[in-house]
Image (cartoon, rainbow over all chains, first blue to last red; front, side):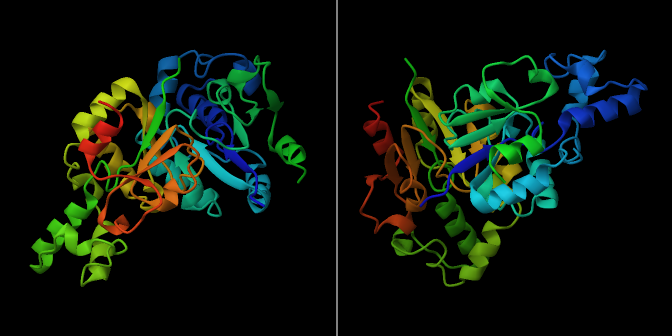
Length: 175
Length: 175
């Protein structure tokens, strides 16, 4: 029997983009934010200098140096033995990130082969049994089961099954 | 009403990879091949020095400099006004090609926005109404209408609707 498939997002799901930005902002501007302070606000808009945030996200090296989300790799590795896993990232929005994201996966998730990697813009044509993502714009058009991974910018969203962290992802999939 | 969608391959469909390899082989080894001589043989195996062919395909610049397939751009541009077009390339097999393929699209198909670009490995989770591709391994698992674009390596394939060139693609889609 064919295994069920899961599309798993990178930014704010496998890769802690929000934590990365918070750490950089503190280093650059000496101002500390907690994730709680950014809750419920669109990406970047919780920072006083929003323009600086976006400049950083678009700068070389940003995506290559994002830390792994807490607990992600252990659960992902287990899921990879049971499901057809596809890591699906909207990398096309940031062309300079293509190589960086590929190298990031090579470093942190070498067990995710090139056949399991998808860099796209619009995820509406990605057809898997499950999609784990932090953006409703991706989940709303998904035909399978949609799973919202909690990120600061989506804490007010109510219309998708929410998983708050990778521990909850593991519990959801019984691993 | 939502427009119908078409997934369109790059190598040997939008980009004349076989022609590019033939031209390089002649320049490098002084031996001319016609596409007819390569018909019915797996990719690369029609050349006397197959190893050189694969080394060339894997070398920097190969994908950036592939010529556009005859007649592709005019038809693609028209299709893009009627259908939801996605350019879907199995670029993950050749990581160095990611940036090159993105730049190639920027140069030759600037009307294909980043939202319409997908670089993947396995195309089985790409769900569109039509898929135009030169590889049966991609078309066999496609749930929509599969269209085989003729390339030397697939001339013996009988089990997909075949379109021999971009003129035939235009006729098929009534444009």
